[in-house]
Image (cartoon, helix red, strand yellow):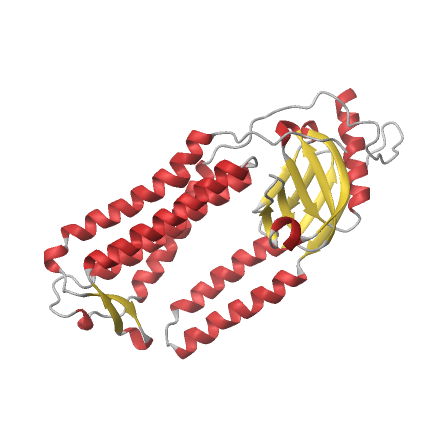
Length: 328
């Protein structure tokens, strides 16, 4: 097994702009807009709506805006540090930027939208339901989060020149023979956690008569579906692991393969959970269950991990195809 140094994190300036500066600017814009309305707002303002869309919790305008700023600052700073510390893979940096911008946008729209409905009121208890605001907030969060992720630059194109080391397993192929390997993997443990979460959202929407939570449950279910089932393929295109919706997706071209091997991993012990994960040592990839995983050491000091059955065969074939690509 080849030992690699800790990878360098590329595109640090762009990552900082998208993961830290952009969400803080969104929060700052929301605060600035709200402050221009200060004279038109009741005191205190409504900050929470209960069953039936009736305001049931209140705060000063300063308190409501302070909570927005502190939450956004903590979230964006955490995502930024994650990206700069463990973001050797573009997917990691994109998830960090998308989460930071998307969640901050959602919170900003909720705060500004709910305050807009209270302008001109003498008593915040007269404010109507905020169902439309919540729908708009989720739409804005998803749209801006996806945009931020798409704007994150990809990984540098670093090509390997040497064949995988001699002690790396190979799958014998005759000259000119073609081969491909594919398998599907899913996460029983994560599905067992995800289903109750979605069911709880549906039950709450009925009990609280807040049907927007049904939309939230649908979004959560769709996001979980992208993370908990994978199709993994090794072929002339390299290693490809993708969800049924096509994203998230990990692709390791043959010219980036330094060496591949199979290894047993534990989601909790090694990666802190299930799904697309980043370990403290910089390894990143899809960890959907305990057991065998294909581990690919890549150019640039990166390491990609994908848990899948028969990982040894997949790794051996990947080494063979990578070596063949070097001499072709």
